Length: 118
Image (cartoon, rainbow, N blue to C red; front, side, top):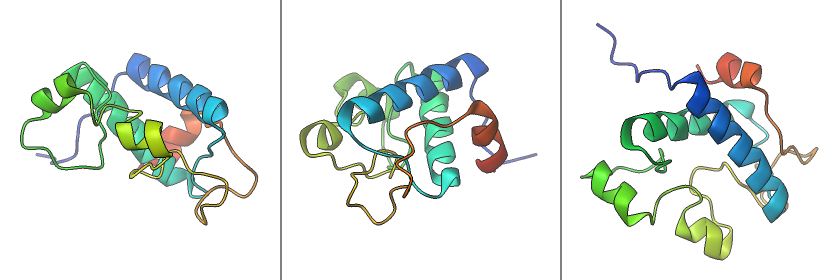
């Protein structure tokens, strides 16, 4: 038996991928230079969308994920991101962040997500 997390549905992954691209463009933020970081986070958000009905930040530990989704503080984009452009997951990075993609990438293909998320 595998302990690996289940794959998100293709529909949820596409919704989250499009959301992330649009949000990055709207906020002037960029994806991580290492595409696997972006891919893992997007898959985690899509998985939470499937399992919990909301795109809960996948990079934090929660005692009660359902309660966290209903409170919405850590739903992507989380409050720290919306208020201060601080993304714990490194999904949305400001231009001055050393991990931001040097070519200012704000798009990612589904193929790249599947190839680099592991």
